[in-house]
Length: 232
Image (cartoon, rainbow, N blue to C red; front, side):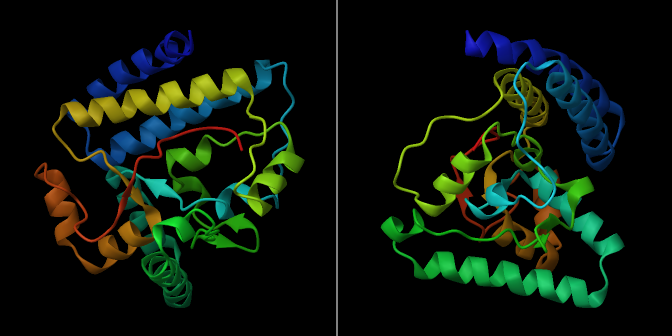
């Protein structure tokens, strides 16, 4: 049943994304996808019977897991930062991203479960690349802030899901539809840890060339099996 509900949103997005990718650049297609995605989510939020607890200044989802992103999302973040950040802001975000990468490298596999890396783009509990944030960040919608806090503070405890049901299926389906369209072009759709992928994108122009040629975009950045979800 969940798959069917997600397909209701995945199939329309797949069709629109296919059309965009045939006539537009990847960046233009991503921007158009984000606009459709936000419209779908806003509609789902407005029609949902479940009230959301998300509010400005709450950033548990930005500090609970290593944020992941697909290459086409990483390059959009890179373009946003290049256009809008001052040299000092850029240095700061790269320093924070480097700390995340080094911390992950130094940790054992078991210890990584308890890591709480702060997204390098989180500044004063606010996203500094909000307009260009990846799908996984757009898809978080919680109905219980207390459970988000508990999950953040105690990673080994099991807390009930607190996502808004209809918003969850809309988010997952819409994001999966665009990803599938990109995948059909033979392009890399792995979910990379954002800190490492962003650093590689900034330092190696070849990463974008590799992506466009259908190769693995990032050679050093680690990948994750975690995909776009919603909830806490």
